[in-house]
Length: 210
Image (cartoon, rainbow, N blue to C red; front, top):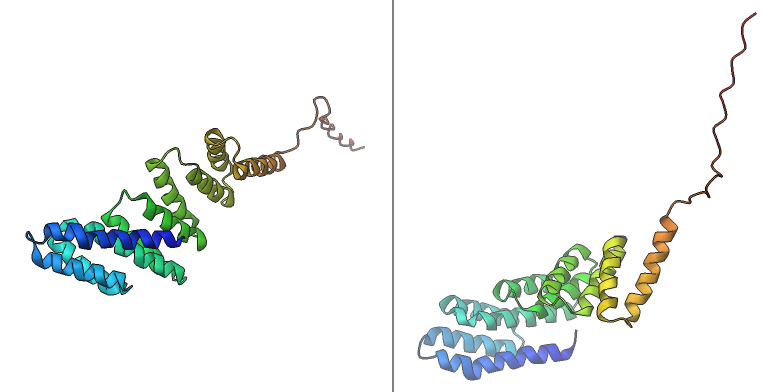
C-alpha cells in the first residue's frame, strides 16, 4: 500500500467539504453539518468518529455515501498498516457496500487477504476485478498465483496464458508457466514403449491326484 492512496482519500474528503457539502447545505443543513464534522474528524485521523458522523449524514442524504465509503477505506488502510488485518477487511467490505463498483477497494481488500493467506476470498476479489477490467494483467497474474498455490494447475495455466497473450514478455508469467509445465510432467504416469508390455504368465496347472 502506498502513501499516495491515503493522500487521495484525504483530498477527496477535502473536496466534499469545500464543494459538495456547500452545494447541499441549503437542501439539508443538518446532514451537511454532520458531513462537515465527519470530514474534519477524518482529516484528524479520528476515523471512528468520522464513520459515526458520516453514517448519520448519509442516512439523511444518500449523496454522502461516497464520503462515508472513502472514510471506511481510510480506516481500513490504517488498520492494515497496523497489521489489524481483520478490521481492515471488514472496513473494505463496508466501503464496497456503498460503492460496489470501486475497483480500488477490491484491490486493497485482496492485498490484505493475500497477506493473511485467505486465498479463497482473495480469489473472489480478483475474479470480480477481472470482470470489471478484463484486460488488466496484474489481476490475472495474482489469480494465477493463487491457483498455483492451491495446486489448481489447469486454471493457473489458463490465467498465465492470458497474461502472456496480453503481455508476452511478462517474466512472472513465463516463470510460472515453466513451473506448471514441470509439475504437470512430473505428475504424468510413465507409459512403456509399444511392444514392451509384459504378457501375463499362464496359471500353473494343478497336479492330478494318483
